[in-house]
Length: 518
Image (cartoon, rainbow, N blue to C red):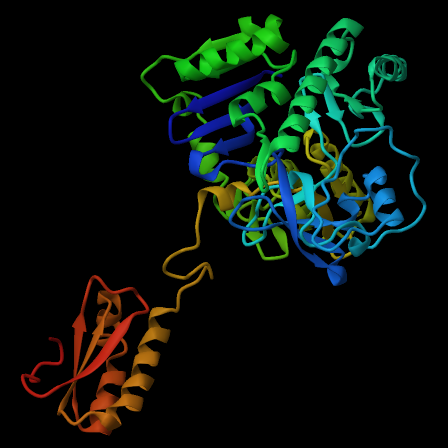
């Protein structure tokens, strides 16, 4: 299976596609005016504590205040113990000093948000979820600094190994190395690419991350409030750090500046991978040459056709995403049950693909076509779990119900592809529907009758979209006849191509009302 990173970089937008066998599996987009702040570290100030929500709002210098839940501050035991021993004086600004000394053991006492934070308090936080919709960013005091091989967690005392490393001997080796290397009880996690890496390389990366953390602490001590203490890498270098491994065959980028930036980054962390980086210089746009644009366009549509002839419909709501499976044009060759099973199994692959490509997160409800046999329901459920294994985001899938529904969750940290690249329709305002032409005609009929009593002229002009005018003067001509007979006034229909389909104006005319169509 071939794996590639394809990067289209311009001054106004950078797009990174992780491609497997010619199909984009993940897509990352960054625009200077809409940059992703996930991973940034800020020195902020608590502006409001909400005991009823077990959360607080923190000013980190953005347009919207960030919010932090009580569970996201519970690991700072040193600060919490200090707070419990002596309540802060009114107006005092207490900065949470993370990891300056060895932390005490975990406290058994359950804390309320008001026990841990107070208005005006200064606090160092990291963005764990970028703003989504009308919600501000979510932050945490459990900081993490990811490298290529390791993740440094300066506010927790934990040694871990990526769950994707399955060999128990290798897991034990990495844990032993990290336990011996670390200092100041910093937490460390060995990433998947650290498998088989020697101690010297792990030590070099740990030292780099510790130096980065010490620089952040210096900025914290001298920085104003609010201020940014650390900025996460741009989308290109994040992709190189997190996705460019020995399993990726090559990285292709169409920007000379970006190409040199990547080579400089690899010089520090992964020099052996420099030979896999290519600069694309052809005249044809790189995403067109790799046949990626059509897949991106397909990922923005509600209806997605399956190879079998069936299709799925993906609907975004405020609280969840609903995915509906339909047989469409597929009629099968054997029994109805076999036709339904084939469609559902075909849909499973496409659903897992679309969820990952669109970066759909939160609660997801999948409505498969009803199957009578329990064994078939279990087969579809297991196929979905297997298809989701390659997803880097954490998923949790519940068994299929007797009604053919599967409930699942997927970790969400940023806007979906749909929300990032689209905006609500200016016609339907995001409703997804317009009033039918006939409905608009009937609304006009009622409004003319309603407003005619205040009109003294002998003619009433109705200004409408051309399609509505055609209907009023054609199939729905009886409406106009009825108004003229009831009101004893002439009705003039005037089409205006600049009008929205649902838009119309009604006004009176005192002369020149011989023709029904003006």
